Image 1 (tube, one colour):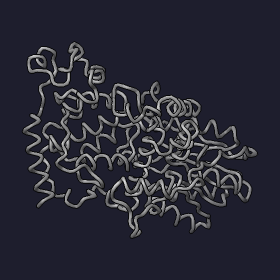
Image 2 (cartoon, rainbow, N blue to C red):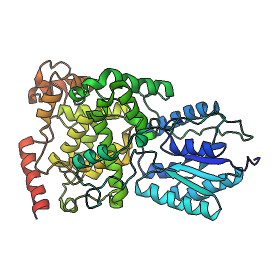
Image 3 (tube, rainbow, N blue to C red):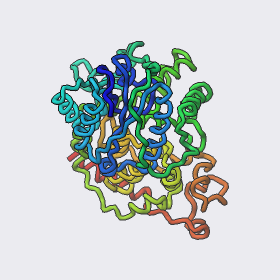
Image 4 (spheres, one colour):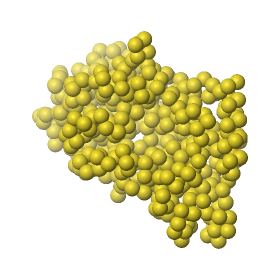
Length: 466
C-alpha cells in the first residue's frame, strides 16, 4: 500500500457510525487527511451476546457510512480482530502500513472495551503513533458530574439536576462533518457480511431517513411525549434507540434537534431526561467496573436466593399465560425491539414474580435487541430487580394485570402480538378466564400473582434486611 502524506490520520470507528457529531473524526480531519477503519470482532461479539439483528443493522449502517464518507474523499479499511485482544496488533499494523501520524477514536465505557483501548493505546505508543481519544458517546465525560464530596451520584434525580446545571452550550454543540479532502492513494475495503437478519422496514440505515425520523419525532410528537411514552400501542417514543446504540446518531445532535424544534424548553423536557438516564448508566459503568462483571450495584443484591428457572423458556417464548408479558416477549422476537414500559413489566415479572436471576433476562435481551446497549440494559435490569443504583425498592412489585389495564386499556398492543386473544374485545383480554384460555389455545398463567408476590417479598426482605 502506498504511503500517505506524513500528516495522515487513522480514525478507528466503533459505536460511532456517523459523520456528524463525531469528535474523533472531525478533529482528526483538522490534523490531516483521514483514513477510517472498522474492526470486525466476531468472536468478541458472540461472547458479548450481541444480537444478530443489531449486527445486521451495524453492517448496513457501516455500508451507508462508507458510501457517504467516500464522497468526502475518506476511505474505509476493514481489519479483523476476532477478539478484543487482537485489536492492538490489527490497529497498529494498519496505521503503520498507511504511514499514519496518529490514531483517533471515541471512548467506550464497559470494562472489556476500556481494557481493549488501554492495550491499543500502549501498542500505539510503542509504535510511536500519537493517540487521540474523545468522549463522543456522552455529552459530559464520566467523572465530571459529581456531588459536593466529589463522588459519583448513585441516585438519578440529583445526577440529572446536576447534569443540567453544569453542562455548557459548548458541550452541547455537536461537531460538524469533516470537510471534503483530496482523495488518497489508498483503496477502501469491501465490508464483510458479519451481521444477521433484521427488520430493515422498521430500521432504515440511510442517514437522510434516520435524520428525518428524528426531526419528525422532535417536531410532531415531542410535545405529547410525556403523555404517550408509556402507551405501547401508540407510536409515542422516538424509535431512535438502535441508532444511539450503534452511534448512527450522536447524543449532542439529538439534543440540538430538540432545541431546534421545541426551543429552549425542550432541553428541560422528559425526552432529554431519558437521554440523561443513558448518560447516568454510562457514568456508573465507567466508575464501577464490577457492573461489567455481572455484579450488583447494591451488595445485598448478591444475597437474593433466586429460584430455579423452571419456566424461563415460557418467558423467553412469550408463553407465560400473562398477555402483556407475552406480547412484549413476542414483540422482541418478531421485531428485535420492545417498548420501554413493557421492558419494565417483563423484567419485573421475571426477576420478582418468577424469582429468576435477572442475569438470564439481561442476557436474553442482549441476544435479541437491535438496540442492545450494555450499560442501559444492565442498568435497566438491575433497576427492575431492585439490585441496582436508584433501583425500584424491593417491595415495589409490578402487577402485570394492572399495568396492562393502565397502559394498554383497549388491549390493542396485546391483540397485535398475541393473536390467539384477538377475539376478546373487552378488557378481559388482559386476564382471560381459564375457559377462554383453553378455548383459544392460549396457555394458563404460570404464576399466581398474589402467591408469587408474597414469596418475592419474603425472599427480597431476607436478602435486604438480613
